Image (cartoon, rainbow, N blue to C red; front, side, top):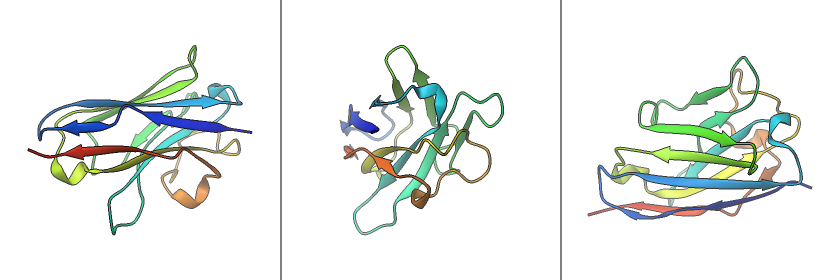
Length: 129
């Protein structure tokens, strides 16, 4: 059974940076994709990034974070990282990581929450002065 645990959230100023982490247990990371989502109060859950070990479609990003966020993985620790730079107040949300063993890569539309069966409980990111 897959388990995912997010960490690293906190309070940062606009324009600042933060790195959050998703620790995965139960499966090897090279067998499936991991995605990051976020949800602000009163809003729909938004897919923001995906990463896999596939040679094609290894990463993708939502337009809202492209150029500011970078996703990476550390297979030795079975973790996925999200480096967030140039943070804006509208980035404030609970950030979730998600996985599904039936999703092998990030080709096509992999940023829909209904595609994923396994979720962490989220980490709060607040961007405010």
